[in-house]
Image 1 (cartoon, rainbow, N blue to C red):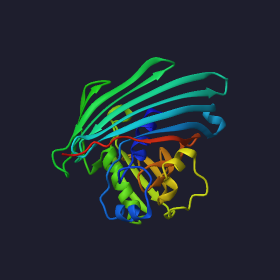
Image 2: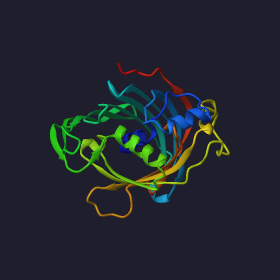
Image 3: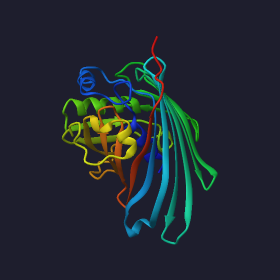
Image 4: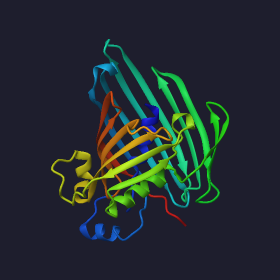
Amino acid sequence: MLGFCQRLLLLLLAAPLLGGTLTGHAQALAAKEPNKLVAHRAIYEMTLDDARSASGITGIDGRMVFEFTGSECDGFSLNMRMVTQMTDSQGQTNLTDLRSSTWEQGDGQKFRFQSSQYLNDKLGDVTMGRAVRETPNEAVKVKLSQPSHAELNLAGHVLFPTQHSLALIDAARAGQALFQAQIYDGSEKGRKVYETTAFIGTVVQPGGDAELEAAAKVKGLGELASWPVSIGYFELKGGDLTPSYQIDFRLYQNGVSRELLIDYGDFSIHGTLTALEYLKASECH
């Protein structure tokens, strides 16, 4: 569950522009500009969408809040907290509190991460570490300090979360239907790289959304182009054609996402955008 939350963050990062409602002229200009991340705070209500009997789950209710700040000069910070109550087939409930903080250098050369999980108010798993690559094509070196000290070398072209967010939005705006990448975000105790395959659907033109949540209407998401996106997460070197899990969502031109659906196979979770606030941007000097 913790791994899902951390990876979900990289899909929800806001992208180009300075936030707020955009006119058609602003959208046209944005298409010609490189992606710029906007500082923001978003809230999602998380509920159980479907569950097989084998999962033993009958209900999930909770909320996810995350806050994104920073700039290419200062680096990008993301703080997330997700609290959910899960009910099993015996009627027992467990309260899970997941917290994650990351910082990524603007050029994608350095990445720091820290996460913790509380189960019924008792601290459980804690992960902390940092990753560095000296040059764009060099292997990533990871140093973990929790849950235990360890050093890892990640070969290949591995993307950090913000890098992946920008690359995914670039692919969507360029009209690509398929985008594949290896992602390292410090999840799974900092020891795992995931192979991902993203399918990007046909663009939904501004005004093409039949229904929008109140939070989406207030921020003018309906005036932006968007794409239906589905990303499968696969075990690296596993050779399995079935993803460990799959995340579906609607990705908007400004990087905001809604209509989340996370499918684990035995059960799936739905996320509804309930609040969206743009924060003061950190300017480069």
